Structure formats: C-alpha cells, structure tokens
Amino acid sequence: MNVSLRDLPSVHELLASASLKDIMNQKKVPGILAKEWVQSELENLRQEIVAGEFEAEKLSREFFTEILVNKFHYKAKNYQPYRLRKVINATGTVLHTNLGRARLSERAIQQVVETSTNYSNLEYELESGKRGSRHDIIEGLLVKASGAEAAMVVNNNAAAVYLVLRSLVKGFEAVVSRGELVEIGGSFRISTIMEESDATLREVGTTNKTHPYDYEDAINEQTKMFMKVHTSNFKTVGFTKSVSTKELRQIRDKHEDNDIIIYEDLGSGSLFPFSEHGIGEEPIVRDSLRQGADIISFSGDKLLGGPQAGIIAGKADYIARLKKHPLARVLRVDKMTLAALEATLFDYVYGAEQQQHIPALRDILRSKVEITTQVHSFIEQMEDKLVNISLTGVEDHSQVGGGTMPVEELASYGLLVKKRKTSANECEILLRKASTPIISRMKDGQVFLDFRTISSADEAIIEQVLITLDKKL
Ligand SMILES: *Cc1c(COP(=O)(O)O)cnc(C)c1O
Image (cartoon, rainbow, N blue to C red; front, side):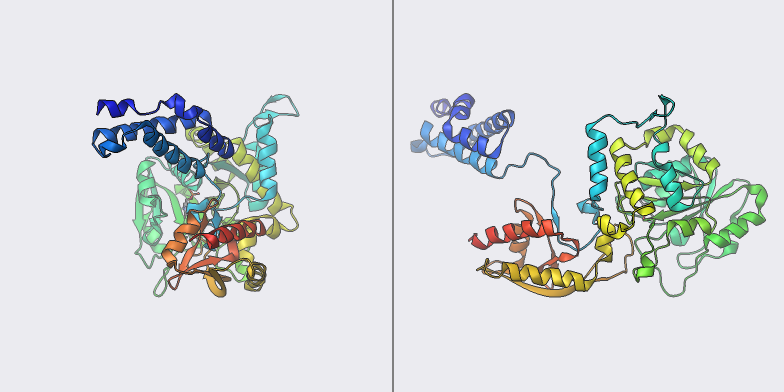
C-alpha cells in the first residue's frame, strides 16, 4: 500500500502538465482554484487507495495521473466562476421570488454602474459642501409618486414592517384583523414580527369577517395602532367582510384622544393601475394613502419592478421618527439600491413609456397576441435546426408571482419541448443544467417554456441550448 501512495503524482507535477494548463486557460480557471481542485482530488484518491478500491496490478503512476487529469477536465468543463448566475426564466412567473423577483430596467442598471464605479454624493450636499443624508436622495420622487408627505427606504418590506412596529408601537398594542394575520413565506409572519418588535398583537374579528365595531371595542389606553395587512398571497371568498381604511379612519377620529396610527402593509404596493388594464384588483399606493392611512409600506422588487427595498411613506412626523430610530441605521440600504430605485421611480414619475422601460411592468402587461407572435416566429426560425427535438406552440396561463395577485391568470403562450428518447423529467434537467440554465415548468407532463418572461436576448440563448441538446445522445 505504501508503494502505491508513493506512485501518486504531486500537485506541482499535475498543475505543470500541458493538458491541465490548456484547459485552465481555455476555461479561465484561476490557478489558486486549480490547486484546490487537484489537492482535493488527490486526497480523495488517497483515501480510495487506502480503502483498497484499486486492484494491485493497476497501481501505477500513469494510471493515477490519468484518473486525476480526467477528473480535472470534467470540473473545468463545467466551471462557472460565480455561484450567483444568470438564468432564463421560462416559467412565465414574472416576479419569481426564487429567480430574483423583478428584472431591473436598463436605466436602473446604467445608474447603478455609473454611481458605483465612481464616487457619488450619497451623503454629501453638493450645494453646501456639507454632509448630507442618503434619505434625501429619493424622498422627493417617492413623495411625488405616492402623494405622501414624506418617505424613506429600508432593506425590504419585512424590515419596513419591523421598523414601523418597533419604533411606533413597542410596549403598546396594535390591532389587527384575524383575517389579515398572514404568513408571507420565508417564515415572515405578522404575529412573529409583532412579537420580535415587542408590540402586543391585539387580534380582532374572525378569519372571514371583521367589523368596524371589532376595532372600536379593542381600543384602550394601550392602543397605538390599527394595522392593516394586504392579503397578498391568498384570497378569501364567500361570506367575508373586512374593514376599509376609510372606516378605520372614522373610528380613529371618533377616539381622537387615543392618537391611534393607521398603518397599512401593502405588500406589493403598485404605482401602476394594473386593474385599469384588467389585471387584478391591487390598490395603487396613492389611493391607499388617500383612503386615510397615516403610513404605508411596500416592496421595491414586487409590482414596482425595482431593486429589493422596503418603502415607507406617509405623515411627515411619523417618517421623521422612523428615520431617527437606531434601527433605521441597521436597516439602511446601499448606494446601489438607491441608484436603481431612483432610476425606476424616475420612470414612474417622469417617464412617458414606463410600461416599456420597466421589465416587470412590461412582462405583466404583455398580451397573449404579442407572445403568440413571438413564439411562432421562434418556431419558424428553429425549423431547420433541430432533428431530435420537436417544438409545439400552445396556450397557457402565467402568474404574476412574488405572492401578488394569486388568483390572477395572465393569458399566455409558449412552447412544449419534446426530445426523442428523452423523458420530460430528463429534458427538464438537461435544460436546467445547460451552460445558461433554462428554468422551465411542466404542463400536462411535458416540458413547457412560457414566453411571457423571455426576451429576444433570452431567445438567442435558448436557440443555442436547444441546438446543443438536440445533438446530445
Ligand atoms: C411580500 C410582503 C412582505 C415582505 O416584503 P419583502 O420586500 O419581501 O420583505 C410583507 N408584507 C406583505 C403583505 C407582503 O406581501
């Protein structure tokens, strides 16, 4: 056994071999990483030898070198430098949480690049030459877009909810309807966040019905807030009743002395009137404030189509208190987020064709006719290029995603992909493991690519992946 271990080539020897050098150059594998690979493969091999996994007559230096070189080549061929990678979202779900939610607009990306490759006036007032506040950067646009007196941004909407409860309700009570005690996913629950923020949750009403008197009866000296939570990811139908912000406002005004804050967690918080385009019943932010909420919060990367962020807007004195709270510093956003958010909001406020510029908005609004045309021209273009793969255009429905408008079905169109002698499951895996992963979904037991979320740049990649896959036996 000792003899065979001595037959193993050295790390240095392997790395110096022409075969390894070639593939390292070709696949741009960094030297340090190549060394790690060789060391770990050598270690594996050593253990296999010690465990007696090789027959005695095979134990030679050439034999081991060949094994190690092959293993290295395999790794190098599939080498991708980064864990976080671009994928093609062929699920049709526009705000796919697992795939990064909203794609940023071209302008947002430009703005991130410009302000992050350089220094910026993130916390510097160019006018006076004095220290500034990063809150000021987008407050003006947020105020214009929402109609609120003041606004601020934190890391995400979960952080926004936490900050609001912790800084305004801590040690007191917030009244929430039992019909709105939601769980959002990723273990974000209203009840848990309430506990964490040291606010006491005062549940009122029932799962399906809550009346104005439920809120009114709950009022005592401890009451600091009426909190409404948008039931983003589910819908109650049938014998239901909830209390509107307007009604909450009336109750609050009747009990003026209690100084109750009305806060609405809007979840997606749209600035665009999707319902006017026949899509969903999502309230727009401006209307929620008009109904009488003192503060609202919503996500930056759901229906807004911007970067991950939590936007809080409302009465100036409350926003000022939130900004001053130590947690605001803990939950503050990076310059890249502010850059992307400012460019996205700018399009809402001043952009003439926001629907075209903001990918999430554009994809949600795309008509079935437009998608069908895209799919048919893709099929035509692929006609002579595939032998073993068949493509069939079929109708289907896509989802908005991101836990918003859960029952909304967007009429869409896409491709059934079938490969000869390959099961649908295998086909799904092959697409997912392609050099640029294509994430498909199953439709009636077949692989389906929904073209709602596929751009023309994506099409070129899908074409290449399909051609490669077609040749694979
Ligand atoms: C999505 C959502 C959140 C969490 O927002 P993130 O930006 O994902 O942190 C909170 N509340 C509601 C109602 C939501 O829909």
